[in-house]
Each structure stands twice: as C-alpha cells, then as structure tokens.
Image (cartoon, rainbow, N blue to C red; front, side, top):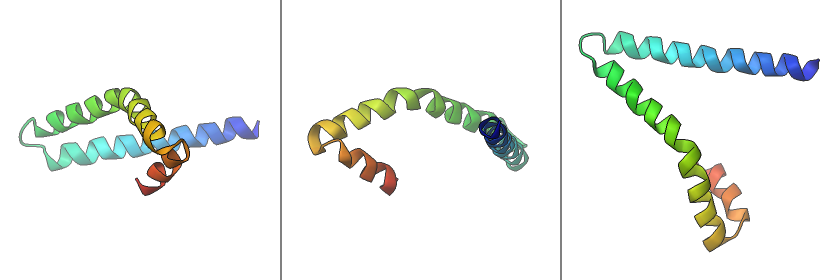
Length: 76
C-alpha cells in the first residue's frame, strides 16, 4: 500500500512539472509557433533517449568498464 501511494505521488509530481513547463513555454512564446517547435524538439529527444542511453552506456562499459557508467551518470 505504501509503495502504491509513493508511485501515485511520484506520478502527480512528474505530471505537475510537465504541465507547468508546457504552460510556461506557451506563455513565453505566445506570438509565433516557436513554442510548438520547441515542444517538438523536446518530444524528439524524449523519443530518442531510450535508443541513445543504452548505446552510449554500452560504449562506456566496453572502453572504460561497467563502473564508469555510474560515474558518468553522477557527472551528468
């Protein structure tokens, strides 16, 4: 039960951040379609992240060892 409550609160927090970000973006770029372009780029990055993450992590693990992935995430 506690796990489900934590997951619910996590979902509310993440969706609240997304909604606030979208609203702020559209208020700043209300004149042109610039806000829509930026949201398109954000969507593109979100879609490509599951592809790029393991690929980059695989190269880091192959050349520097698996522990270096944790250091790289810490630096980012």
